[in-house]
Image (cartoon, rainbow, N blue to C red; front, side, top):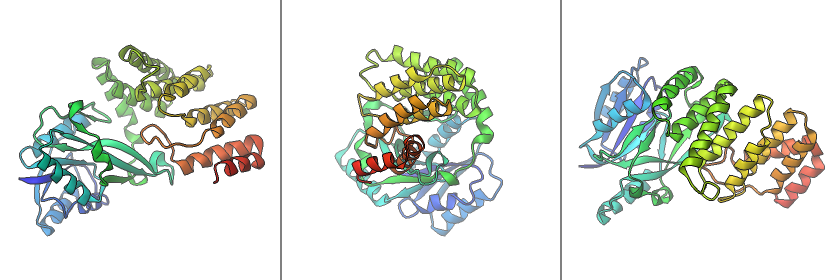
Length: 361
């Protein structure tokens, strides 16, 4: 049996699928492709690449229902083909594949019971900001034929797996997946669809904080601040109910819920300061998240409250940037550009110079 197979769901991926497949072509004998209705020659392109490189190809075309439904079909297509699966999007590129192969072979020798592998994921130009290259961690490599591993949530799908069998050390083995977000397909066309599908889903799955988070994200993109206030508050209350010591244990969902609630209140002309201060304090169990202060400074600046804008941009600049990639919105260079720019507007270039000297920039 092969060590790995590569699983990709596609639809009209000409221009990206070639790079994705070529990034792994020398390290796998098996591609598993689930097509949801390509009309641009994607399927022929995939067949040509596999034929040219003498690779096995298992391919099927299935009507798109939702992301978790279709990805679960693609998982089942992989059963029996390999020991492990690499789960890729059609615009991903695998880097340093030799490190992945070496790591998995060592795990095979050790007869490890780990079945999901936390993977380093590098996004270039994240949030459509040029130069905002960031690192996240997602489970993109899994053991094959494990029925307890499956996708959940119809939009922004995520893996369900036994938490005690996750290998978190894998993320530091040297292998990582790269994606350039500026080359991603625009998602604005489907925001209304996302809202409809997610709202239906969270009615039945009220305790799914990930779905609530993405629903709030969609409401924010659409500018639906009345609903955002309602569902941001619901997310906050859900996490307070779930985690008894919420003030001592960091929760991304609780943190983002407070931000969504605060943003909704800002755009509705209400007081938002308390929500953001709670979000800042919640991060203190891990690190000082100065991005919260920066966003507050921007909001007060827009409200022409110069005194508070000055207060929070100074607090923001007093905190040295520390990278917590799965939490922060900006990388260090982009973040510094934004905060120095606002500091210049409020205090002048001399004040910026003081911080540049302080942080030796």
